[in-house]
Image: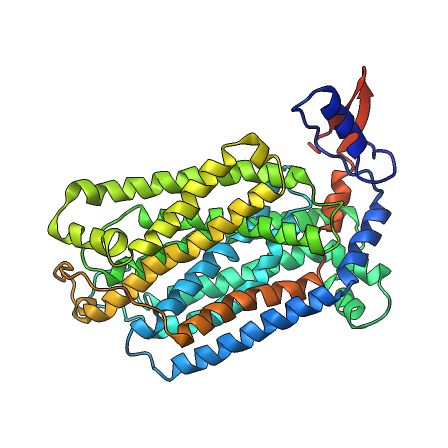
Length: 482
């Protein structure tokens, strides 16, 4: 497939099509040449605006605030769970958002979709948050007791759960950074060749690994992306499963929910896509990438977001009905703690924002076929997910202290007491703000070194799409690489 004609995003054909056929929309075609794409994306990447500096200062300040809160919590030691309950909820939230976001790029690259090309790098850049989540995980690992002589998923595995937890979290962070680096090698080579001499150009030269775009180099790069992508996806599902099992299920006697780990993994996919759409919107609005991020990306992603939100409700209902219809004494207590009494407010917020808002919003085509609609729904999903993590992990850590004896028995008696909710203290709020601000801070830094819109994938996409005249209207013609 040859390139389309030179110029800017082909909106004229789409507009004419809409005028002649109300309600129809033609996907937009980027008709810039590869050199134009390289120059414009690199120019936007190098540009440092006052707004960017302000965002960096605010998020950096929040990160410092979080470090102070973290230091205060360290003085509480690692004897009890409750001082670290909100730290755990924050870690789980980052794992479900920044940790899952690269899967958006991995999954769409595997099925060779074209609409994701400008969106993929925005998802992959979240891999830098793996550095922060790994550091946040250290105190959580220190308070987790051994699996010996207690109920857990590990049976008699040597070194469980600590060895496997740290391998999972560190492995996911390393794989994420490796995936980001390999995917960015061609763009780093572009910075090496087109940037003015300086620190950024020198680092780009080192990290581009002498990439010159030979057929062999492209073949190796694509194979590496496939392998790293598959490994990242498998590691993510594994680490979410064992985190949910060890830091929630195993701390609550009588909590039997085989769907729970899968539900948490599904919520991660939902939140990862939501975080990617919010990041893409901010890059389009304030980053200078308006011509590359169009309605196509948000419209296509919103369909997947709607499906994931419906699946979230299905998984939740499948687990909830077991307790609702069982009504054994310990099941009634768990219902009262997680849903009806202790953590009723976080549950209602999460149910409303993770299911009702996405369903009632994205069921309308006019909302899906827009930019602002999917972004608003994505913000709702992120807020709802945070409250869902509070409901699950704060309650579990609270029970870990209330029933400390259960952590040293193979067959502990079921939970029988409804405890009041555990509210956050000042250090907890500082850690929450610092961790979320730290993720954004690292993302902003990375986005000024690695282009947040992939030059080579967007340029490649121009080879497969163009606008042609057919009878009295313009249509898009798409080619397939194989």
